[in-house]
Image 1 (cartoon, helix red, strand yellow):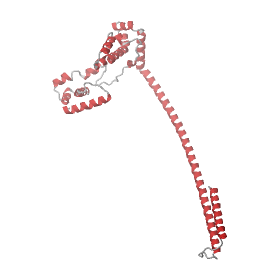
Image 2 (image 1 turned 135 degrees about the vertical axis):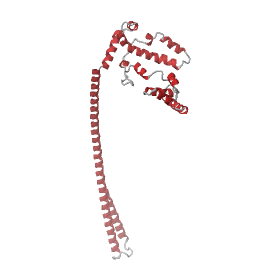
Image 3 (image 1 turned 60 degrees about the horizontal axis):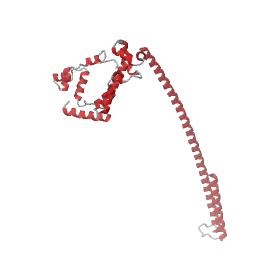
Image 4 (image 1 turned 90 degrees about the horizontal axis):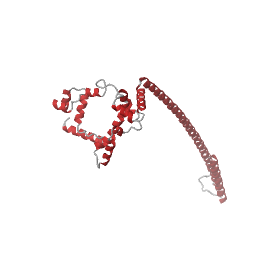
Length: 304
């Protein structure tokens, strides 16, 4: 990588780490991380230095001083690259109730006091006292049951038996639990039980789904029936309205015929002649029309 590209990549990493609240003080040495990755991927020294731009001596002194095969072997793996899974069953082992960091690190309480008395302690000091020491204590307490079994006469084994109550019983319980968890037959049994529980869970979920589906279908059918009944009632109402309109139309036609007859009789059969006659005839015609209108309205109301 050129200097400009490396700087841009560094800024991108810093932004990403700042967003995720990740602290890596060596973020500016991304070229180092790239060289480590190339070396761990199996590239020969000449290929690594050709990509990094370092000469042979600089690469040997600064980056390639620890061969990856040595690191893999030191970690306990048998092949390179490592094919085995990295799993430590004892990491879940419970600690004795009276096992505290100061039992293993006699100055731990003093370190805590000094850290608390420091106005602005450095982050490295805070992490050392509050995180690293408790973590090392936990790892040691989880590993010591196996150490004491392999080296019962060691001074460390004697110290744990003398200073931790019921240490022998606790250590035996940790060893038995870890070995049971890593036993192939026990693991197979656990997997079978897990599979059975998984199948039972899926069967229960499937049954619940089918029941819920049936309930939803029943509700949907009920809603469809209600909508069908509403449509039928709407159609019947429309039919009654149409019947009422037809009946009203018939009454109107009859009333028009009666008026024509009355007008024709008054004019001597000549519909074009002016309407003549007594006021009683006009009143009679108007009364007849009013009666017809009233009857038609009543019929329409009855139909509705």
